[in-house]
Image 1 (cartoon, rainbow, N blue to C red):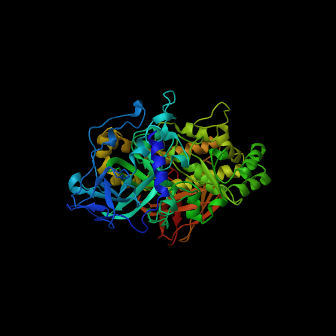
Image 2: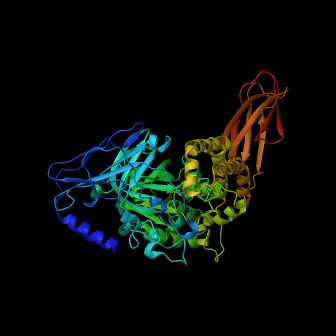
Image 3: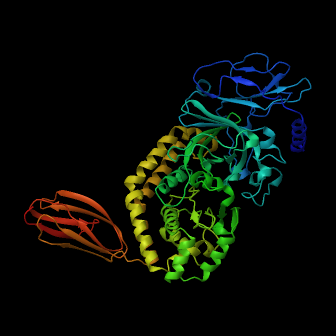
Length: 607
């Protein structure tokens, strides 16, 4: 009923003309402040200014501005409103707050005659601390969040106790469940962007958590059809149609950082992935914890990264059985063909490669295997094509990754699952493409070769440990507040234990998974041979390295005193590789390749 009345009133107001070019001016501007100041509002004569301090849209019944006043935050305490099932609800006594002021012009009849002006202030003195991460302030009318019939933040009318994780107002989707919001982004102590936008609840199971995800929608009707700011360093994009705020609580382990790490591991690959960064969110002025702002894997992502028009993009989920944009006609015809194809036949393999970007698909699959994403491959799959181009996959949602909760054999079993009774976390439908590819012997060896190179160059512990340290350092100052607010993680010490678990995973994964993967798909890693010629040699010699699966030659040359005089690496191809050894002084040397105990003896006659 409340929503119906609100919609009716909004409709009536929409029929009345706003004051052209007029609005409430609020000063100072949104931002981060150390000291105190007074808030001042100005508007044209003939109108009164009414304002709120709780993030809601002001009405004529709200406070009327008369003179400057000091920053004051609301005590409406929305954090105490239960927004999830009992099983997920953990109450807290108090939260940190910032100051949010929303104001509008009203005529003598109490009718709003302007858009709503909003300012958000992070007051370090009031907080008692300085927030090191960027800050996002979202202001949303309380009816839009908490109304029983239409509030997007509560169980509400659509909650079913028999479906705790899959029912509730927050599980509803589509434009009908988009609400108006004000978005403010602050970085390095300055307000970088402030604009009105639309918001919807984001995620799957995490919708039923206390700390919910949001998708932000820039539309012309809200004022600007883009978020015009370079939120993510290095990707060259300075405007976005959609942004996602992923909650810390989406992490399956409560470590909070898995998806961020996975996205960094994906950066050098041929598949697509999402830019992401941690922020602190305040909702209607109340602390809502650590989130990860990231790109949204939709048709606008393709436009922003590749320049293709949205209407030309076919974007599919669930291995092509759900359509997010465009249509699936081309894919479904191809998928039917794959079911009967024999990719060991060259002509079938070539046709497959004309429909799928095989190199990018392989990178995508190997990444999912390396990080052991247990909420995949039956879930969290998105692929795209433009005007018949080869299909590509976007890596997203690594919240269930980087954990030893599954043995290597399980994630490997997922990618070759042919058990018709399985639907989740894997199924024959989700494994079809990769199972068919593995029938091609050349592809099997190519995949092992690629896995070896990815591990050696990007996923070795020397490369991944700094990533874990980087993100841990970024969020560490907020962990105690995130824990106090949502009990996720349970404590700072508990979080540190989770980080150590990820560290152990990254340390052991390169060797164990590579060997198990090669064995699982039937590639014999022992099929290599190395010889040296000429030997003895005059200064220069060639190492001939034959490998049936490529990989990387990592070799060291030692003198008779056991000192390493040369350490080099060389990427290998399948077959014969000729590696030129460096010039060395006369003497006897020993060459150790890829860490094996056996050494080649090299005699240099006259260096």
